[in-house]
Amino acid sequence: MDEKKSNKVALIVMSGDLERLFGAFIIATGAAASGMEVSMFFTFWGLRAIKSGRATGRSFLGRLIGFMERGDLNRASPSRYSFFGLGRWLFRKMMRSHRVPSLKELRQTAIDLGVKFYACEMSLQVMEISHEDLIPEIKACVGVAHFLSIAREADITLFI
Image 1 (cartoon, rainbow, N blue to C red):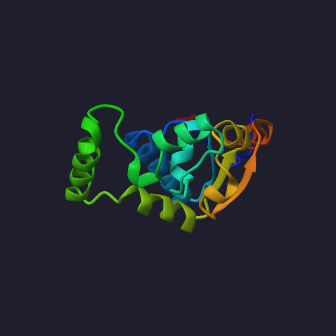
Image 2: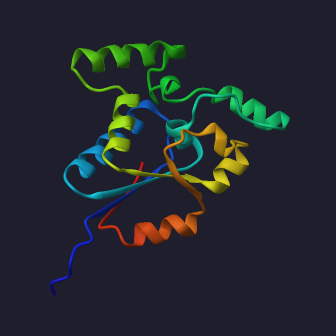
C-alpha cells in the first residue's frame, strides 16, 4: 500500500518547563527547516511560550495564577534544579557556552520558517489570558476540535 505522505508535524505543547520548551522548538524548527509543515498547539502551562509577558487575570484567582506564572519565555525554569531562579541562569549560561540559541531565538526561527502557532481557547479562558496578552504571530486561538483536525492530517504528532 503506497500512501502519499502529507509531510506535516503537529506538536501539542502543554509544559512551560525550560527543557521541554527547548525540545518543542528544536523539533519544530528542525522539521520546518527540512521542509515539513509544522503546527504547534499551546495549552495550559505551555502558553508561556507565546505570552507577551504582561500581567494577566481579571478575578482574584486569575490574577494569582497570572502572578505565579508571570512572564514569557525569559521566566521559563527547568523542571528540576530550579533553585529559585538560579537554575534558569545556570542553564542559559550552559546553553550559551555551547552556542545553543536562546528560547526567544528558537521561537523567532520557528516564526521565520513558517511554523503555525495556535493557542488553546479553553486554556486562555480558564487562566484568564486575553488574546492581547499573546505574541502577535499567533495564527489563531482555537478549540481542541480544530487542532485535532490539523493533527489528523499530520504524519507526526507529539505531546510535550
